[in-house]
Length: 358
Image (cartoon, rainbow, N blue to C red; front, top):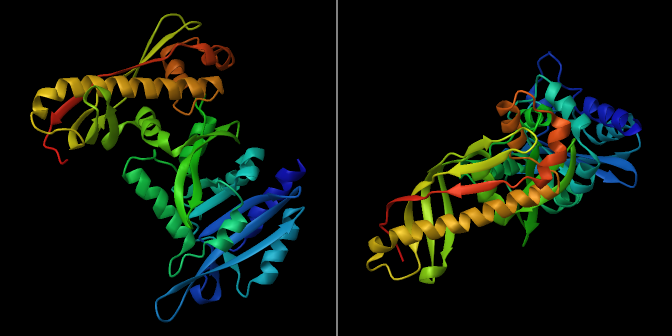
Protein backbone atom coordinates (compact mmCIF):
# COMPACT_ATOMS: atom_id res chain seq x y z
CA UNK A 1 0.00 0.00 0.00
CA UNK A 2 2.90 2.30 0.80
CA UNK A 3 4.36 1.81 -2.69
CA UNK A 4 0.99 2.43 -4.36
CA UNK A 5 0.56 5.69 -2.42
CA UNK A 6 4.08 6.71 -3.35
CA UNK A 7 3.50 6.09 -7.07
CA UNK A 8 0.25 8.01 -7.04
CA UNK A 9 2.02 11.01 -5.56
CA UNK A 10 4.98 10.80 -7.94
CA UNK A 11 2.75 10.69 -10.97
CA UNK A 12 0.36 13.38 -9.75
CA UNK A 13 3.28 15.70 -9.13
CA UNK A 14 4.66 15.04 -12.60
CA UNK A 15 1.24 15.86 -14.00
CA UNK A 16 0.72 18.90 -11.83
CA UNK A 17 1.43 21.29 -14.70
CA UNK A 18 -1.54 19.99 -16.67
CA UNK A 19 -4.07 22.64 -15.73
CA UNK A 20 -6.65 24.23 -17.95
CA UNK A 21 -4.93 27.60 -18.03
CA UNK A 22 -2.76 28.28 -21.07
CA UNK A 23 0.99 28.07 -20.65
CA UNK A 24 3.62 29.92 -22.68
CA UNK A 25 5.97 27.29 -24.14
CA UNK A 26 9.07 29.27 -23.22
CA UNK A 27 7.95 29.23 -19.58
CA UNK A 28 7.53 25.47 -19.14
CA UNK A 29 9.42 22.19 -19.56
CA UNK A 30 7.49 19.75 -21.77
CA UNK A 31 8.25 16.14 -20.80
CA UNK A 32 8.48 13.56 -23.58
CA UNK A 33 9.78 10.62 -21.52
CA UNK A 34 9.16 9.52 -17.94
CA UNK A 35 11.10 6.60 -16.46
CA UNK A 36 10.63 4.56 -13.28
CA UNK A 37 13.14 2.35 -11.48
CA UNK A 38 13.20 0.45 -8.22
CA UNK A 39 16.15 1.67 -6.16
CA UNK A 40 17.04 0.17 -2.75
CA UNK A 41 13.40 -0.25 -1.67
CA UNK A 42 12.65 3.23 -2.96
CA UNK A 43 11.51 4.62 -6.31
CA UNK A 44 13.56 6.67 -8.72
CA UNK A 45 11.70 8.92 -11.13
CA UNK A 46 13.56 10.28 -14.17
CA UNK A 47 12.10 12.69 -16.72
CA UNK A 48 13.47 13.89 -20.06
CA UNK A 49 12.84 17.36 -21.50
CA UNK A 50 14.00 18.18 -25.06
CA UNK A 51 15.47 21.67 -25.32
CA UNK A 52 15.24 23.17 -28.80
CA UNK A 53 18.15 25.46 -29.56
CA UNK A 54 18.07 28.64 -31.73
CA UNK A 55 20.11 26.85 -34.42
CA UNK A 56 17.46 24.11 -34.71
CA UNK A 57 19.36 21.43 -32.79
CA UNK A 58 17.91 19.50 -29.85
CA UNK A 59 19.51 18.78 -26.49
CA UNK A 60 17.92 16.37 -24.01
CA UNK A 61 17.82 17.62 -20.44
CA UNK A 62 16.98 15.20 -17.67
CA UNK A 63 15.88 15.46 -14.05
CA UNK A 64 15.98 12.57 -11.61
CA UNK A 65 15.27 12.01 -7.94
CA UNK A 66 14.93 9.12 -5.48
CA UNK A 67 12.55 9.04 -2.56
CA UNK A 68 10.55 6.82 -0.28
CA UNK A 69 7.34 8.71 -0.94
CA UNK A 70 6.17 10.50 -4.05
CA UNK A 71 5.92 13.96 -2.53
CA UNK A 72 9.62 13.86 -1.71
CA UNK A 73 10.54 12.81 -5.26
CA UNK A 74 8.25 15.41 -6.83
CA UNK A 75 9.72 18.22 -4.75
CA UNK A 76 13.27 17.14 -5.58
CA UNK A 77 12.42 17.18 -9.30
CA UNK A 78 10.84 20.61 -8.97
CA UNK A 79 13.90 21.98 -7.17
CA UNK A 80 16.09 20.96 -10.12
CA UNK A 81 13.97 22.59 -12.82
CA UNK A 82 14.05 26.26 -13.77
CA UNK A 83 10.56 26.00 -15.26
CA UNK A 84 7.48 23.89 -14.37
CA UNK A 85 7.51 20.27 -15.59
CA UNK A 86 4.48 19.63 -17.84
CA UNK A 87 3.51 16.39 -19.58
CA UNK A 88 1.57 17.83 -22.53
CA UNK A 89 3.91 16.14 -25.04
CA UNK A 90 4.53 12.89 -23.16
CA UNK A 91 5.47 10.27 -25.75
CA UNK A 92 6.45 7.24 -23.66
CA UNK A 93 6.69 5.90 -20.11
CA UNK A 94 9.60 3.52 -19.63
CA UNK A 95 9.98 1.01 -16.79
CA UNK A 96 13.12 -0.70 -15.58
CA UNK A 97 12.81 -4.49 -15.40
CA UNK A 98 12.94 -4.65 -11.61
CA UNK A 99 10.22 -2.02 -11.35
CA UNK A 100 8.07 -3.86 -13.93
CA UNK A 101 8.48 -7.14 -12.06
CA UNK A 102 7.06 -5.51 -8.94
CA UNK A 103 3.99 -4.22 -10.81
CA UNK A 104 3.13 -1.10 -12.76
CA UNK A 105 -0.67 -0.92 -12.92
CA UNK A 106 -1.04 1.80 -10.27
CA UNK A 107 1.51 4.01 -12.03
CA UNK A 108 -0.02 3.59 -15.48
CA UNK A 109 -3.57 4.06 -14.25
CA UNK A 110 -2.79 7.66 -13.31
CA UNK A 111 -1.56 8.35 -16.85
CA UNK A 112 -4.56 6.50 -18.30
CA UNK A 113 -6.98 8.76 -16.43
CA UNK A 114 -5.21 12.01 -17.26
CA UNK A 115 -7.04 13.80 -20.13
CA UNK A 116 -3.83 15.45 -21.40
CA UNK A 117 -2.22 12.06 -22.08
CA UNK A 118 -2.88 10.54 -25.50
CA UNK A 119 -4.47 7.09 -25.64
CA UNK A 120 -1.69 6.28 -28.13
CA UNK A 121 1.07 7.02 -25.61
CA UNK A 122 3.58 4.19 -25.57
CA UNK A 123 4.57 2.06 -22.59
CA UNK A 124 7.70 -0.08 -22.67
CA UNK A 125 10.08 -2.00 -20.45
CA UNK A 126 13.82 -1.40 -20.63
CA UNK A 127 15.94 -4.47 -19.95
CA UNK A 128 17.97 -2.86 -17.21
CA UNK A 129 17.95 0.45 -15.34
CA UNK A 130 16.07 3.30 -17.05
CA UNK A 131 17.98 6.05 -15.26
CA UNK A 132 21.34 4.65 -16.39
CA UNK A 133 20.01 4.17 -19.91
CA UNK A 134 18.90 7.81 -20.17
CA UNK A 135 22.26 9.09 -18.93
CA UNK A 136 24.18 6.86 -21.35
CA UNK A 137 21.99 7.48 -24.42
CA UNK A 138 21.61 11.17 -24.97
CA UNK A 139 20.95 10.83 -28.68
CA UNK A 140 22.51 13.90 -30.35
CA UNK A 141 20.11 16.34 -31.93
CA UNK A 142 17.08 14.12 -31.32
CA UNK A 143 14.31 14.09 -28.74
CA UNK A 144 14.93 10.84 -26.79
CA UNK A 145 11.26 10.28 -25.96
CA UNK A 146 10.24 10.76 -29.58
CA UNK A 147 13.12 8.57 -30.81
CA UNK A 148 11.99 5.61 -28.66
CA UNK A 149 8.38 6.09 -29.77
CA UNK A 150 9.44 6.10 -33.43
CA UNK A 151 11.45 2.91 -32.86
CA UNK A 152 8.33 1.15 -31.56
CA UNK A 153 6.02 2.61 -34.21
CA UNK A 154 8.41 1.66 -37.02
CA UNK A 155 8.37 -1.98 -35.84
CA UNK A 156 4.57 -1.90 -35.64
CA UNK A 157 4.44 -0.56 -39.21
CA UNK A 158 6.83 -3.30 -40.37
CA UNK A 159 4.64 -5.86 -38.55
CA UNK A 160 7.48 -6.94 -36.31
CA UNK A 161 5.39 -6.07 -33.25
CA UNK A 162 1.62 -5.85 -32.67
CA UNK A 163 -0.05 -2.49 -32.15
CA UNK A 164 0.63 -1.26 -28.63
CA UNK A 165 -0.19 1.76 -26.49
CA UNK A 166 -1.48 2.55 -23.00
CA UNK A 167 -5.12 2.02 -24.09
CA UNK A 168 -4.46 -1.44 -25.55
CA UNK A 169 -2.38 -2.47 -22.53
CA UNK A 170 -5.25 -1.73 -20.17
CA UNK A 171 -7.80 -3.30 -22.51
CA UNK A 172 -5.85 -6.56 -22.33
CA UNK A 173 -5.37 -6.19 -18.57
CA UNK A 174 -9.12 -5.96 -17.96
CA UNK A 175 -10.10 -8.63 -20.53
CA UNK A 176 -10.86 -12.12 -19.22
CA UNK A 177 -8.76 -14.74 -20.97
CA UNK A 178 -5.97 -12.43 -22.13
CA UNK A 179 -2.73 -11.16 -20.57
CA UNK A 180 -1.07 -7.84 -21.43
CA UNK A 181 2.37 -7.40 -22.96
CA UNK A 182 4.73 -4.53 -23.79
CA UNK A 183 7.77 -3.92 -26.00
CA UNK A 184 11.06 -4.85 -24.36
CA UNK A 185 13.87 -2.45 -25.29
CA UNK A 186 17.58 -3.06 -24.91
CA UNK A 187 20.92 -1.68 -26.02
CA UNK A 188 23.65 -3.27 -28.09
CA UNK A 189 26.88 -1.62 -29.27
CA UNK A 190 25.57 1.68 -27.93
CA UNK A 191 22.31 1.53 -29.91
CA UNK A 192 18.74 1.05 -28.72
CA UNK A 193 16.79 -1.83 -30.26
CA UNK A 194 13.61 -3.85 -29.82
CA UNK A 195 14.86 -6.77 -27.75
CA UNK A 196 11.64 -8.76 -27.48
CA UNK A 197 8.28 -8.92 -25.72
CA UNK A 198 7.80 -8.36 -21.99
CA UNK A 199 4.96 -10.58 -20.71
CA UNK A 200 2.71 -9.70 -17.80
CA UNK A 201 0.46 -11.51 -15.34
CA UNK A 202 -1.82 -9.45 -13.10
CA UNK A 203 0.12 -6.29 -13.86
CA UNK A 204 3.57 -7.72 -13.12
CA UNK A 205 6.22 -8.64 -15.67
CA UNK A 206 6.90 -12.34 -15.25
CA UNK A 207 8.63 -13.40 -18.47
CA UNK A 208 9.80 -12.32 -21.90
CA UNK A 209 10.12 -13.53 -25.48
CA UNK A 210 13.33 -12.94 -27.48
CA UNK A 211 13.60 -10.90 -30.68
CA UNK A 212 13.74 -14.14 -32.70
CA UNK A 213 10.08 -14.77 -31.76
CA UNK A 214 8.76 -11.32 -32.68
CA UNK A 215 7.44 -12.11 -36.17
CA UNK A 216 5.69 -15.29 -35.04
CA UNK A 217 4.24 -13.59 -31.98
CA UNK A 218 2.85 -10.80 -34.16
CA UNK A 219 1.41 -13.26 -36.69
CA UNK A 220 -0.35 -15.34 -34.01
CA UNK A 221 -1.56 -12.26 -32.16
CA UNK A 222 -2.96 -10.09 -34.93
CA UNK A 223 -1.93 -11.49 -38.31
CA UNK A 224 -0.08 -9.84 -41.20
CA UNK A 225 -1.17 -7.41 -43.86
CA UNK A 226 2.24 -7.33 -45.53
CA UNK A 227 4.57 -9.27 -43.24
CA UNK A 228 7.73 -11.26 -43.87
CA UNK A 229 9.60 -14.41 -42.81
CA UNK A 230 12.96 -15.99 -43.59
CA UNK A 231 12.55 -19.78 -43.62
CA UNK A 232 15.16 -22.55 -43.98
CA UNK A 233 14.24 -25.13 -46.61
CA UNK A 234 16.14 -28.26 -45.55
CA UNK A 235 14.96 -30.33 -48.51
CA UNK A 236 16.69 -27.89 -50.90
CA UNK A 237 19.55 -26.91 -48.58
CA UNK A 238 18.53 -23.27 -48.95
CA UNK A 239 16.75 -20.32 -47.31
CA UNK A 240 13.75 -18.48 -48.66
CA UNK A 241 12.60 -14.97 -47.83
CA UNK A 242 8.84 -14.56 -48.06
CA UNK A 243 7.45 -11.04 -48.25
CA UNK A 244 4.16 -9.17 -48.63
CA UNK A 245 2.55 -11.90 -46.54
CA UNK A 246 -1.14 -11.51 -45.88
CA UNK A 247 -2.47 -13.80 -43.17
CA UNK A 248 -5.22 -13.71 -40.58
CA UNK A 249 -5.14 -16.28 -37.76
CA UNK A 250 -8.38 -18.14 -37.09
CA UNK A 251 -8.94 -20.09 -33.89
CA UNK A 252 -11.16 -23.17 -34.23
CA UNK A 253 -12.60 -24.56 -30.99
CA UNK A 254 -14.38 -27.90 -30.63
CA UNK A 255 -15.38 -30.17 -27.80
CA UNK A 256 -16.48 -29.63 -24.23
CA UNK A 257 -15.60 -26.49 -22.25
CA UNK A 258 -13.58 -28.63 -19.81
CA UNK A 259 -11.55 -30.34 -22.55
CA UNK A 260 -11.58 -28.10 -25.62
CA UNK A 261 -9.78 -28.97 -28.85
CA UNK A 262 -8.13 -25.80 -30.12
CA UNK A 263 -6.54 -25.33 -33.52
CA UNK A 264 -5.05 -22.24 -35.13
CA UNK A 265 -5.74 -22.09 -38.88
CA UNK A 266 -3.40 -19.74 -40.77
CA UNK A 267 -3.28 -19.46 -44.57
CA UNK A 268 -0.46 -17.07 -45.52
CA UNK A 269 -0.35 -15.65 -49.03
CA UNK A 270 2.89 -14.04 -50.13
CA UNK A 271 5.78 -13.71 -52.56
CA UNK A 272 9.26 -15.17 -52.67
CA UNK A 273 11.52 -12.13 -52.40
CA UNK A 274 14.83 -13.95 -52.15
CA UNK A 275 16.09 -17.49 -52.43
CA UNK A 276 19.59 -18.72 -51.55
CA UNK A 277 19.48 -21.88 -53.68
CA UNK A 278 19.52 -22.47 -57.42
CA UNK A 279 16.81 -20.21 -58.82
CA UNK A 280 16.78 -22.07 -62.14
CA UNK A 281 13.54 -24.00 -62.30
CA UNK A 282 12.35 -22.66 -58.94
CA UNK A 283 8.78 -22.55 -60.27
CA UNK A 284 8.78 -26.35 -60.15
CA UNK A 285 9.82 -26.29 -56.49
CA UNK A 286 7.06 -23.96 -55.25
CA UNK A 287 4.87 -26.73 -53.84
CA UNK A 288 7.82 -28.26 -52.01
CA UNK A 289 8.75 -24.84 -50.60
CA UNK A 290 5.17 -24.24 -49.45
CA UNK A 291 5.04 -27.57 -47.60
CA UNK A 292 8.44 -26.96 -46.03
CA UNK A 293 7.40 -23.47 -44.91
CA UNK A 294 4.25 -24.92 -43.35
CA UNK A 295 6.25 -27.50 -41.42
CA UNK A 296 8.76 -24.93 -40.06
CA UNK A 297 6.08 -22.41 -39.08
CA UNK A 298 3.89 -25.04 -37.41
CA UNK A 299 6.76 -26.28 -35.28
CA UNK A 300 7.90 -22.76 -34.32
CA UNK A 301 4.39 -21.56 -33.46
CA UNK A 302 3.44 -24.64 -31.44
CA UNK A 303 6.71 -24.40 -29.50
CA UNK A 304 6.00 -20.77 -28.64
CA UNK A 305 2.42 -21.49 -27.57
CA UNK A 306 3.54 -24.42 -25.42
CA UNK A 307 6.15 -22.20 -23.74
CA UNK A 308 3.47 -19.63 -22.94
CA UNK A 309 1.14 -22.35 -21.64
CA UNK A 310 3.81 -23.74 -19.32
CA UNK A 311 4.14 -20.28 -17.78
CA UNK A 312 0.38 -19.81 -17.50
CA UNK A 313 0.53 -16.82 -19.86
CA UNK A 314 -1.96 -16.01 -22.60
CA UNK A 315 -0.96 -12.81 -24.43
CA UNK A 316 -2.47 -14.24 -27.63
CA UNK A 317 -5.97 -14.23 -26.14
CA UNK A 318 -6.76 -17.92 -26.67
CA UNK A 319 -8.81 -17.84 -23.47
CA UNK A 320 -10.68 -14.80 -24.77
CA UNK A 321 -11.69 -16.81 -27.85
CA UNK A 322 -12.80 -19.70 -25.64
CA UNK A 323 -14.84 -17.28 -23.52
CA UNK A 324 -16.64 -16.10 -26.66
CA UNK A 325 -17.20 -19.70 -27.80
CA UNK A 326 -18.60 -21.24 -24.60
CA UNK A 327 -21.54 -19.83 -22.66
CA UNK A 328 -20.43 -21.51 -19.44
CA UNK A 329 -16.73 -20.54 -19.70
CA UNK A 330 -15.15 -19.91 -16.29
CA UNK A 331 -11.82 -18.07 -15.97
CA UNK A 332 -10.70 -19.94 -12.86
CA UNK A 333 -11.35 -23.33 -14.48
CA UNK A 334 -9.72 -22.17 -17.71
CA UNK A 335 -6.54 -21.18 -15.87
CA UNK A 336 -6.39 -24.71 -14.45
CA UNK A 337 -6.70 -26.54 -17.78
CA UNK A 338 -4.95 -24.04 -20.08
CA UNK A 339 -1.33 -25.19 -19.40
CA UNK A 340 -2.17 -28.79 -20.37
CA UNK A 341 -4.22 -28.15 -23.52
CA UNK A 342 -2.91 -29.64 -26.76
CA UNK A 343 -3.14 -26.57 -28.99
CA UNK A 344 -2.41 -27.25 -32.66
CA UNK A 345 -1.40 -24.83 -35.43
CA UNK A 346 -2.08 -25.61 -39.08
CA UNK A 347 -0.47 -23.55 -41.85
CA UNK A 348 -1.39 -23.66 -45.52
CA UNK A 349 0.99 -21.35 -47.36
CA UNK A 350 0.16 -20.06 -50.83
CA UNK A 351 3.08 -18.56 -52.76
CA UNK A 352 1.62 -16.22 -55.35
CA UNK A 353 4.81 -15.32 -57.20
CA UNK A 354 8.37 -16.58 -57.33
CA UNK A 355 10.24 -13.75 -59.02
CA UNK A 356 13.31 -13.93 -56.80
CA UNK A 357 16.72 -12.40 -56.21
CA UNK A 358 19.56 -14.67 -55.28
